[in-house]
Image (tube, rainbow, N blue to C red):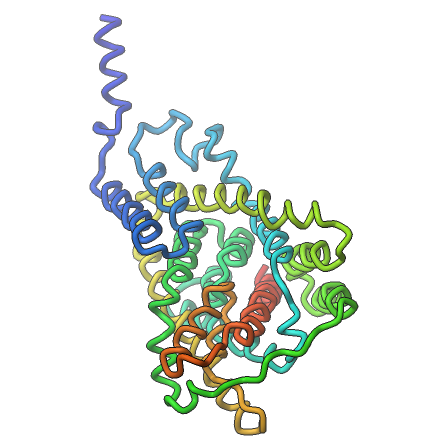
Length: 377
């Protein structure tokens, strides 16, 4: 009888006994993400861990086995604490700061405005979420998807709407990977070929003193204006000053290589595993995914249109394509600006200029998150 009882327990705890078609749907989603990462090379450092995490998170099991990411005491739950407590995103910002060169942005400060203009996607998505019936806090977390910054989206969501971390993170990272598909049609629709062919002057050389002072100044200014942004902006600038100081090469190298790689890998895996079908496959998740597409498209349009408006007052014209790089997907959005520009004129190189609004977008989305946290937290 003990053997029969044991076999019965074994069978009842297996994935087959706890199968639900929704788990199969999510496993297929994970396979698609892995395919996009490997076959299409769409942000593989993000999509591969997320895709495999989706598969792990949707293997059915009996409740109480301390396996699932939402079960207290499971290993996945311990790893997931770094997500829901907002620990991983600031560490990623530290690494981003250590690999970022602010020189182009400092050489042409007016391009910072394009990074600010692209944040319109955040607030349009925020309003859209309210119209679709989400609460203010939920709408704030959903809106930040428009910044095209996965760590920022996760950080703000962990503070405002932790129940939506899975859908919001998957939406943010999926659309970040699909930027080469989402942005170009919007960019071409809003510009003429003549505008896409505008060539810009190369940036001036920036002194070491400027590069060292900038992270200090921006941390103080952002800290006073929007204290909620201090954790993300502060860690970004801390990483940058490690790089620019020239005296902490070992720390800078660790932050931009091993540290950010480890945290990105764990973060992506945990985000994927958090998409358990019984939690993730809901009408609200589908609404979030739709709002994410709207947020990315409107952020792209905002940056491009603002660049066109600036050209009405400037003698030294800006190529409007770099306005689309105001979203903070670094450097993917800048590469898209370069690619679309070269389709109009193969001799036109916009990558360096596009990096200015691209980097400004990282800071802008962090500030927007801080403002939303102060207003709604």
